[in-house]
Length: 579
Image (cartoon, rainbow, N blue to C red; front, top):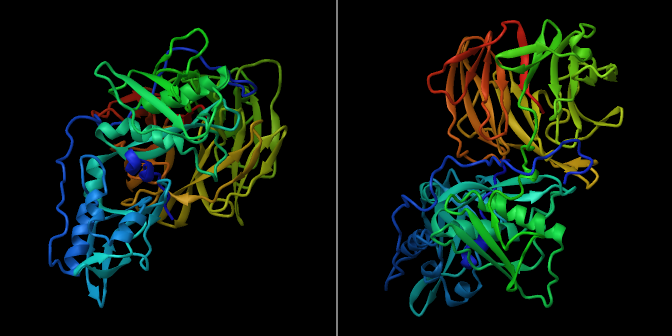
C-alpha cells in the first residue's frame, strides 16, 4: 500500500541547543526548503458554485449532483452538498478525509445508486494517504430515501469525493513540522493543503492536530487548542490566534515557546505572502526572552531537518582509498582510510565530516575511522558481512548499515561499538539494492528488487526516544511513483521530503526523476535525461546545494538544463555528500 499525507480535511471544513547529538547548529543564515508549485494566492482556478437539487430529480441525478457539490469552491464547503441528503443525514454527516478519483459511473440497483470509481485513492481522517482504493471498495453504495416526495441520500460516505483534476488544481504540497523526541530536530510531514486564503489556516490547523499517534514525534503547541483562521496582512504579517475550551491554560515556558514558535515559523514560511507572524493563546501573546511578540518565519534555523551547518563536501573512493573535498579539488583524506591500509569500495562521512564509515572491497567488513588524522585508528564494527551496502549517518551521529545476505537483508544501526539489528517489516529479509536514512533520523528509504527487471521504492518510519535510542520501525510502505517501472540504479536525497531516482533506459541513457517520501505526486518536477556511463547520484537535502549525476570522469548538475559536466578524476567512485 502506498502512503501519502494530505491536508487535515476535517479542520479545513470546520472553518477552516542541540545537546549530545554531535552536530553544531548556527543561529543565523537560514536556508529554507521551498515549493516549486508557485504562489498560493495567484492564478487560482475558477470558482465552482454548484446548484442544489431540483424538484423531481431522479436518484441518479441526486447522486451526480451530490458528487459535483462536493467540489464547491473557492472555499472548500459542504453546505450545498448537504442539500442532497436527508435532514437526519445532513446533521450527522461529518466528512473526514477524501477519496480522489479519475472517473465515476453511477448505475442503480433498487433504492441504491452506486458510484463506481476508477483510479481512486483515499486519505484517512487526519489526511494520511491510505493508497489506492481496493477493487472491492471502488464501488460506493448510496442508500436513497423519499423525503417529502423527493429522493435524498440517507447514508453518505464519511469522506469527501472529488476528481483528481479538481484536487491537483486546488491543493499544493507543503509540510507540517514536528520535533523529534529529543526536541533537537524538526521533522517534516508532507501534506497537501488548499491554495489561496485557506493555505496558512490549513497549515496551522494541521499542526494543531499534532503528529500521527503511531510516530515518535513531539508537538509543542499546547493540547486542545484550535484556530478558526490565520489572516495575513498586506505587509505579510500573519495573526495566529489560538484558543482553548480548557480553563487556565498555562503559558508556555521560555523553552516551550521557542519550540512552539519554531514549529510555526518553519510551517508558515512555506506561504510566500508571510514574512512575520504573531501568536496568541487565549488572547495572551507568546513572547521569547529579549524579543518582541512578532517573529520572523526564519526563526528556528538551528532545528533544520537537513541539519544546518553540516558539511557540504563530497566524499568517495579512488583506487580503494577515501578522497574528499569540492568537485574541483578531491584529495586523499589524511585519516586511516587515506593511508592505503584499507581497500574500500564505498565510504560515507558523518554530517560534520569528522568520522567516516568504510566498506571493504569484498563487502564483508565495515570500519569507522576519523576523516582527518588525529592519531587514532579505525574500529572494525562488522567482519562477517555478506554484501554490505554503502552506510548512512543521521544527525545524532548514529550509523546505519544494510547487509544483503542470501536469506534477505539485515538492517543494523550502531550503538556503542556494536551494530545492532532492527527488524523493519517490508525491508528486513527482502532483496535490498540500496538504502538511505534521512538526516533527521526519521525515515529509512530502500530500493527493493522485485524481479530481474523491476524494482520498487519503500519507506519506513524510524521510532526513537529522547536520548536517541532506536526502539523500532514501522512497516515499510511503497512510494514508487505510480507511472514508474523498471530497474532503479540509485537513489539520493533531493530535499528533506523527496528523493532523486536514477532509472536506466538504455545502456548509456538514464532518466533521473523525483519521488516524494510519502508516495504522493511530488511538487518537484525533476525529470532529467542523462547520457554516458552513469555511476550514481550525489544528492543533498540542503536547499540551494547542487545535486549531481555522477558519470565516469564528471559531475552533471541535475538542475542544469544545458547538461554541462564538471570534470573529476575518472578513477573516483562512490562519490556522495555526507550522511
